[in-house]
Image 1 (spheres, rainbow, N blue to C red):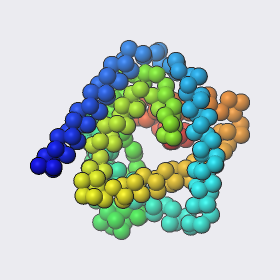
Image 2 (cartoon, rainbow, N blue to C red):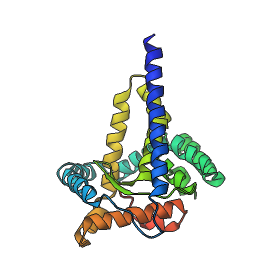
Image 3 (cartoon, one colour):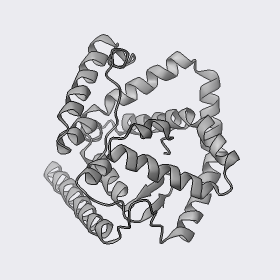
Image 4 (cartoon, one colour):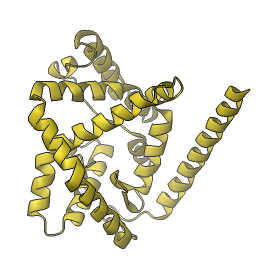
Length: 250
């Protein structure tokens, strides 16, 4: 009986989240601006959240990331990053399919089996060494491919730069992640939160030098991060190689 109630509760949460996504999608379409412009109607609020995020980053995330870099050898850090990428395969593959990207789906499947079977569970990027590069896909990109405009620029507490469209995609990706669903439904929530924490430290370590340079050389750090985020997301959606030269601002 309790299991039935829990199942109904989870189902209602999913329906609520999907309804929110649809609403955000409508708002995104309504608040679209011409290409090249950043629609930031809540800039004052966004700047306040950005300032808070930067303070948390300076006090916690950056020191942790530097400690991680200093203590953990580069090959081990690369192995951790490879495993985290391998675990994202179901989400990436789902978005490949939703985008009707047959080549991308083929590469994603190839990478998963090659790296899992011959790369010691994903520790080694065997596929990448043989010409099958890693390409991350999310539902925010899928919405963009479908024609949804980014809508209003947002800065999410702790999560950082986003948009109405990308925040919607984040909700969908989170609720439909098979790994998350399995861990949460088998009393292994701690493993999921551990994965999230490791992923956050890994991403911050990867961007230590990039963000330090951006902060040092920017007259307006907020505007610089916003511009970098918007440009990279646009490049990813349009399949441009320029996205490889832009920092993956978390």
